[in-house]
Length: 130
Image (cartoon, rainbow, N blue to C red; front, side, top):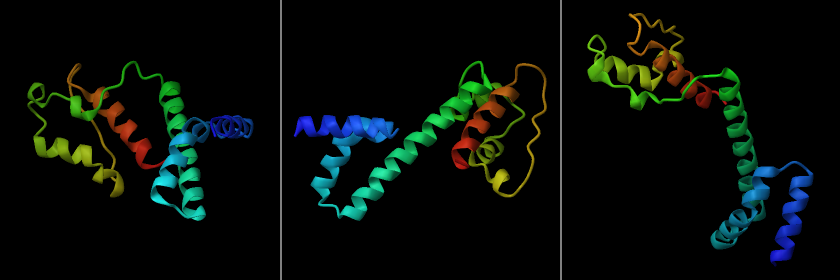
């Protein structure tokens, strides 16, 4: 069976399905374990490849944006920023302002975390709108 999987993996790579080529054994084992129908197997197979492509595109876009470093909003130290309440910060993290069509303006002196918040929220935004 190992030779067959290697052949399938090579064929998948030939038709540019690189994500499922790497995870084919995992996908097959899960389908056997769950006794999936052919339709469900095909759905999982395609979802795996689509998710992999979205992740690669996302990483490529982040790299192309040339952000000097990556930090998440969870790493933001609220104790350093007295003018931003925990409630306001949580609203920023929830991204409800995007869904409501509001703009976000970050004001403050140098070194308080405006750029870090903007970069972190842009990373979250792209995951929302893939």
